[in-house]
Length: 68
Image (spheres, rainbow, N blue to C red):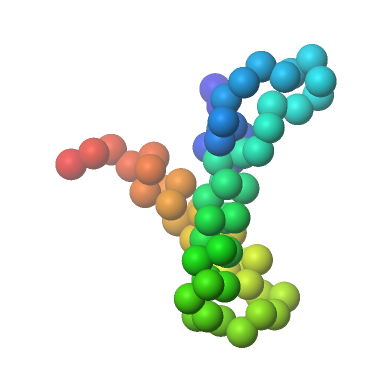
């Protein structure tokens, strides 16, 4: 079973090359970081990537919940 952190953002078969592209977590974090920076929610510091990954993890958690 694939862990949520290992799900590819853009599935393709490059396993023979040793990679399968960007993970969904990385993709969500990149989008979150872009939004944080463009909205100027936080001054740029070393914490912004951590905030972005926290948002990505929250997005993955909601995605994995059963639908109501």
